Length: 505
Ligand code: HEM
Image (cartoon, rainbow, N blue to C red; front, top):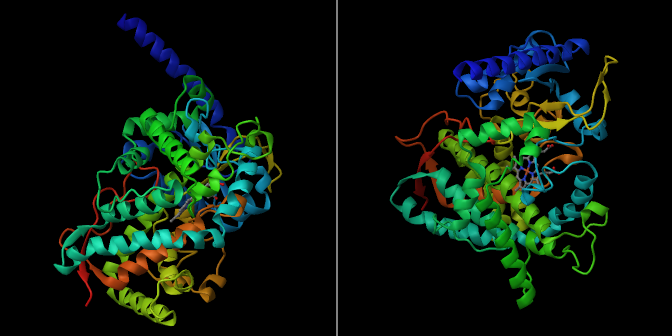
């Protein structure tokens, strides 16, 4: 039996070896500069061997290709699969904007048949994505966000009240935990129409499920890497992103909200209301599949779910990095506080939407934080159809493309002294001096982050409310730099992030 199994395994490895060796000629044939791969991991053995986040593996490959003289693009291998790595902001513009029709989709694995929540705007492809994006986009206009402003402000004031006793005694607090609770309440309120009050109730079911959705075990991460590499096999095996309990929980939350609003005639200024207003008339059969967009209950649940999936961790970790940086740069923190007070004074001390829109310095601080610590560290696309490279060779369709946002943002040729925290890099004048695609934390082009404006407003408001009332500084438990979680999909902190909080008189 043992001999039989060894023989089968050896044969399997041999077949895989021959197959991968053949695949490893891909970039050479297309005359694209590449890094020599090794069987079986290609160029990503670092990711499996050592404990580093995937974005640093990509950054290392980016640097190596550039050092070897590649300018606009290069080729790498992810196990047996070729991946096209973009190496310059100008070529990123070509992919994301100029030739967008060739690079419309992310090509990330999803399986809407077994996992209805994965049929959302982030994962969908081609015409399904395009139709849905057109329909959902108007929910993110300034006017609609302005209507939600007071929902966020209410939660912000509750957050200040919660922190006050800690600030009064100059306590050390885990800002990662409290900011996650703040951000969960904001997204739960705006996307799901729920008052979760995680700020005061950290054990709420909504938060538990939200956490489960994002934090993967190593085995789940490996399962999803397998699924992304072998998509047909993963579809056949019915591999899903979301665990059944997470999926059932969010679908039921949406069902209950819709039923309640319909039965009570209640309306609310939130994303959920805008999605309900697009809800499918049950007497008709049309869904966004047909080009005429109405949404089914599952489709509404999938979109609300993706606002949490894409909006929660990104925004809360950005605020964590931001406060951590400000705690190490008290001069910039003071300057930020001054700018908030000056702005508010123009509006008689009233926290209103217009005052927040004018918090330019806070915006620069957030942009600089996003440059140093982009939560989405690589932008993903794949070739939706054959694409002719500037060298005349053609990349076939369905080849993965990575635009390394973190690698650009930490490249000294694009940002001198790249690890220095310097918000003045984001004044209008400074921005005009460099390529606009040098720092792209929200992606770019038609498929860039749909929640960018909403995300910026909730972060500016949250940060301004905090800095107005409290000083944040390093304490004994503060680690510097923050350790990065190697398994998380997002580029974020590994554990607790402690800072000292002091109420200002
Ligand atoms: C700091 C905050 C945020 C960051 C850094 C961020 C970053 C990103 C990035 C890099 C992408 C991919 C863009 C591309 O491929 O070109 C993306 C997509 C997306 N984001 Fe965000 N995001 C943030 C907040 C939000 C919020 C608050 C929401 C929703 C309320 C949201 C919803 C989405 C959705 C739905 C997509 C997919 C868009 C599509 O494929 O059409 N994001 N985000």
